[in-house]
Image (cartoon, rainbow, N blue to C red; front, side, top):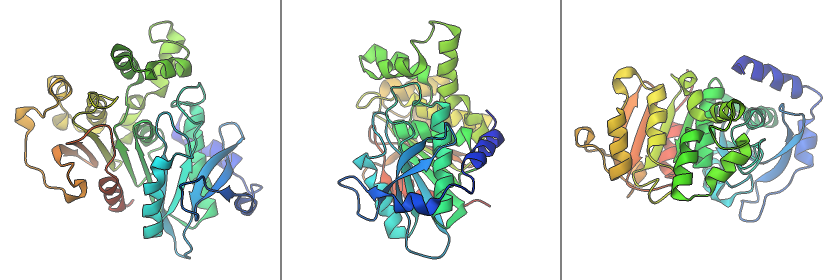
Length: 327
């Protein structure tokens, strides 16, 4: 679906009759473990005109503020406590924040990169723009694991929205991850089958779902978008997503001369080491003890492989996003 069509459908749904003040008035306290300044709201989604849950924070300032959209992990939902560091950053910086549900855990047909997911996230941004004074040149997206997958997907599906996207430990190709999880005995492959209708190779319709829901299908449309893609060198060994997903995602947005070869990617995956010809000394205090081992920049896209596993370094992600602004 074209991005312009997505926005047209969004505008039609989030029209003047949607009373933002009523939505905010009917908000509920955030789940336990979240700051009390955060509220739970139900915002209208252009996907099916249903009211979808999200956690929302807006600072008490009059000036236009940046918006951070945080995405939950693969098996999580909008109440996930692991995303609290995102809103704490926003509270310190006077940014707005929204944490949408986008149909919850990635184990149903309406979740896992579906059209519902895409429209829910776009609608969450539109709600935040109506509920707070948002600087549209500074709308950011961040996520790790399944949230990193969602971030890469939305970078390609709606690149015009974002001033910057930061994706960590991300799944980029569902068919590849299905096979990798099945081979390792990780139950995530069953989640993907429930979402897509079955295993890959069963029939053309199911295979089409794997393609439509994979971030790598759309990443070429994210060329030019400030994009930070990171993962730990040990992911796939001490974690569930091989480093190849991050490196292949970077290849989709990188210039031809900046892409990694298949042999180099396989070396990262199999040996948990940077190929000798790619080894350089990298200084980046934002990563702390999780020092970067490999970094490459191509245009506005940057890939970093660091000393770690299946995780996000919040400081590195949020400080990188803070530096991004639309021209």
